[in-house]
Length: 326
Image 1 (cartoon, rainbow, N blue to C red):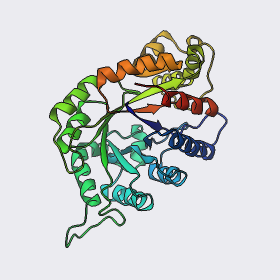
Image 2 (image 1 turned 90 degrees about the vertical axis):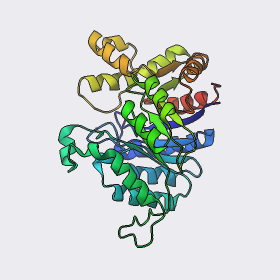
Image 3 (image 1 turned 45 degrees about the horizontal axis):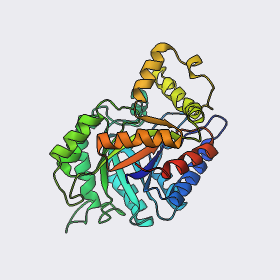
């Protein structure tokens, strides 16, 4: 049985405020915990009206405070936007408050546009030092050395487990060299998934944190009682991805009856390509799709994104998904 987890972007639905979106994410995490999902991750994005997870460590504290046992983490923190020391302090604090439950997934992309990157006061070339920054962060979370001049307090000695996130071969190679678990962002950038997983497993070097490779793939999954109902719910996701093509990143929209009336032929091609790793339908349909996907990729864990507009339908989707066997 493949491990199941959730990647939540804290979507702000049309008609809701960020406060309400944060409350809904906490409620979803509680529901996921009750259903037995392994972890609940939140991703860092900036300057996006429809995503309320920008202050990721703060959001994770909110989520962890409303749950008891599910692992909570970042999927991910965009490390080039931050000082490794500050992230060590933030996640060291989370680990001190919620011991044994915190994951720290790290990405190399800025999670925003160039103008917002400047507003974050970060150098556009900061991503070039990503491997060194990961090692520095790891050192800050390790037990402090005698005479160590700069320590993360809290942070030192918490040894929060690190993950490398990516959508290309770069992250796969880095995760393999450092002996860290690897999560691939196939929910929006699926093209290099198979090649990246193969490279990661081939080059993996055991580390103190991890003795053998551990690979996760992200996917969009929507399960409803019928294929038709699930496809209708999926139109909210499709419209969000059309927004990316149009460079419009607004609120999460309610589903519509006919997606073909919304997008152009060109937009359909672009959005559908990004959404290749999407599994939508009735329980029977999705179970068949996911069995084939897991058999093809050999992943250890599936982390699910599900931007369903209606909260009740979202809860129901995760209930149905948890009952499947793949």
